Length: 302
Image (cartoon, rainbow, N blue to C red; front, side, top):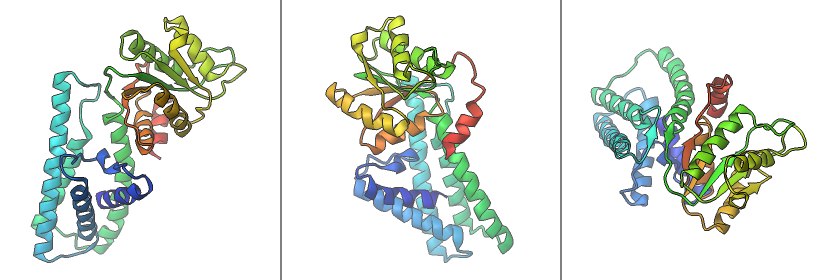
């Protein structure tokens, strides 16, 4: 799984130049990018060989183990940095466990198995086990992203706050989900975190557009109308990113906060990153547990 993930992300840079998707599981930006790409590619190839080849010569296993230990230590340092930022108060989290700890444990396990030449002799177990574990990782990895990244609050002084839309009823009332987002965004604005609020969404259930309902809510809760910008074309996350980028540029907004529910934040951050913009995500403060949350989390896996 990690071998495929690493190599596919490197290939993805060809489509999105400057976008390093491998940052989602390891941060090696202290090294030159060309060296990082070479290390990740080498590690990815070694992992695939180690996964699929039944037995290996000792020197190749030792190289695999050394790479795994190197990456495990690097990821572990990323996890330590998470706790340093928590201690400093730079970030906060209701799920204070970084994804790095899970990945470091996996890499140390791979290193141990490579060093000891742990081989499953039964081919039936291998060829059933490989796809089962692979699919399990494919589901578990984004779920951990949802909780580890989505539950982390990166609020800080910024230039603008972006709020993606959710359902607005025919009479203009906000759905509970949208009210959670707008309430959090208004709190950030009134707390002095940013001078501008951008609301983005699509049509509501009736004549009142989602963004109009969002604007009315913000004004009713003390945000001056002149500090609210409206994007009526935010039909989905990609559309919100595409239409808010020019608005942010017109505001000369460098640091941007994006407020949404925790399960949506990894995808939002990923979409902005692919468009060449880093944003700081803030999970909406939920008035109560939304019954659709489990379904929404599973939907985000895809």
